[in-house]
Length: 336
Image 1: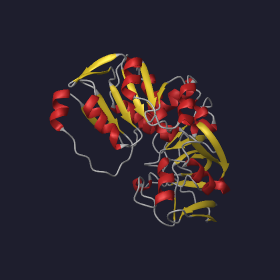
Image 2: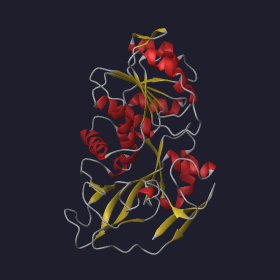
Image 3: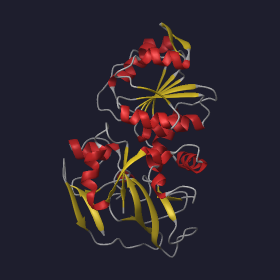
Image 4: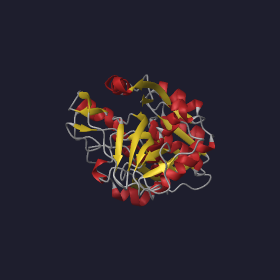
């Protein structure tokens, strides 16, 4: 099979490996589309130690939609030819490989496969390209869920990448009334605006003024602030936590989903008086897969608009380099 092996900072080896052998209890998945994750870009650009545990000489890629190429005799409820989403934590039988299931190779081997556990069948209402975004959308959906959204609440999402947009869409799906997305890329913010969200370039604009004008006034423990109930950090800038602790509305929640390496000092007394909550959100759960599929099936949002570039598998390295340019791209996919 065709495969991409990670060989360290700035190095990808496009090679051929033996085709995987199907087990009696499993399936062989043929990749249709793969989406490039920010962690794929990070390890290519900066080396290992960032995000997922990608090893030198190993396969990588995990945001993928597949078709069942072969199935074992004991597999129930699935057929050759079915389109499926492989659940990264479980599909390979090795939970340590959640970020390296072989999304950038031709095939993925799932040694034990059950519908609704290791793989999820994909509705005909979801296109192949849209299905390539299921995994990052489940991460965004989990972040939105961790914020415990209530009908009619307001939210700000920092980061107009695929996860941030997925979180914003999930917040609306869960009943939030107003959602704003903040980013430094005007290119990405224009796409966000076309999807129907309020936007703010918080590098060029005063976020507090823009937020108060859009959401109205609320109150923090230090006085007047924007009427925002949920903040989601899908960008990873240190300033987001600092700003929340200074200006967060009483009884609001900040969900951290972006991966950062810096240790932070938190004013716990300020959190106590302000009734502020800081919540971590990592990965996804089965209910997030189901909600994302419901969102995608609804057709309410033109989700494929997020995909700005498509490359063939043999141009993977070029595609990853392009994905690093946030001023000209949003989501980049690989077609097999």
